[in-house]
Length: 93
Image (tube, rainbow, N blue to C red; front, side, top):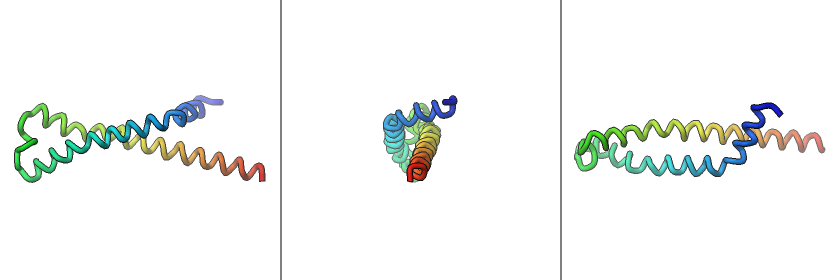
């Protein structure tokens, strides 16, 4: 078994952890959305209170990159697994 297949076998065993990571990243987006709405409405309740808070809430957008890559890997893994199962069924039929 080559390194590529070993990696995907390992990753497929970790899919639940990947989904949990995606869920956490999505939940982190809730304060960011409230902060963003506050900027758009120019209310100043959450936004522009402190530059560090603004920096963290703006930076949450960058965390989404992990989520996007993770979802792509899960989709690839599931498609790969489904194709392998179809090939196995075709061979046994």
